[in-house]
Amino acid sequence: MATENHNLQPLLGMTLPQLQALASEQGMPRFAAKQMAQWLYEKRVTSIDQMTNLSKFAREKLARDYCIGREAPLSSVKSTDGTVKYLFRGAPGRDIEAVMIPDRDRATLCVSSQAGCKMGCKFCMTGRQGFHGNLTAAQIINQPLSVHEADRLTNIVFMGMGEPLDNLDPVLQAIEVLTAPWGLAWSPKRITVSSIGKLDGLRKLLDSTKVHIAISVHTPFPTQRRELMPVERAYPLTSVIDLLRQYDFAHQRRLSIEYIMWHGVNDDDRHADALIRLLRGMEVRVNLIRFHAIPDCDLTSATDQRMVEFRDRLNGAGITCTIRTSRGEDIMAACGMLAGKKSLQS
Ligand code: SF4
Image (cartoon, rainbow, N blue to C red; front, side, top):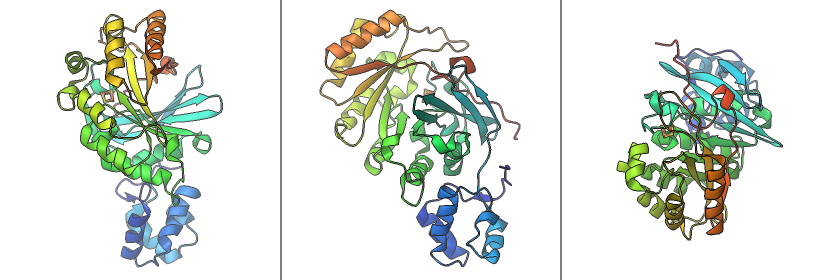
């Protein structure tokens, strides 16, 4: 798969209505939009010339301004546990990463939505590198279509680089392509969007999709959360929880709470009890996550024993809680370790 001319507009990531508008602009019959969607998402062609049920004239005209938009990974590295980290072209100045995590009969791809991130969470490598740009819908959809395991992916999680709700429209567009019958026709139950809880975007995501939601909480105390996650100032956790309480997570979709555990910071019973009070009555699952050391950060992971005790305290209070297995730490692909690479683009 060749990298295409970046001056051309990608077709990848376009929705059916957008392809219909394009067909009309190009003087093609309306049904050509469905044909293009089929070539892009079902047959997964890599060049416009392969769209052989469009006339030669139509293909040549289309190729003057458009390309497919598929781009092969720039590189990949495999962990001893089977996790694979891929590097893709991102925004000028910063390439982006996607991580494939195999687990028995599942293969989950953790995709990026931004090159870098504006949110500045103290414990995150992506946040440390600053913000370099939003990914387009084409760049987001390209990740699941272009990894080596593309044909056997079972799940997609928006937990890679960036805050998905800070790049909402391309993320929603990518979700539409992933789930629409004319697109990849995935069930929304195979997709999870993880967010720090950007309220405006969260409401729109909840109203317009049925994907699972994961919220990064990390501490139930506002003052401490402000120190760890500056976003608490703009979007207080209590407001995020109030919003989530208005939606049904008992049936079609699932709500997870992400909680990284740091030694001596948020791993005691006081935190567990406050978290129990915060989530009381909600249909929710709490994921406890080991912290992976990153450079120039004095935080360290809670001990295994403390994590087990914390988990048991939540379970004892009726809140489903599990400890997430760490994956890909040896290739810097574990949670919070994604940094991408400085790209050679200007
Ligand atoms: S944890 Fe998520 S929101 Fe926070 S800086 Fe990292 S990528 Fe951004």
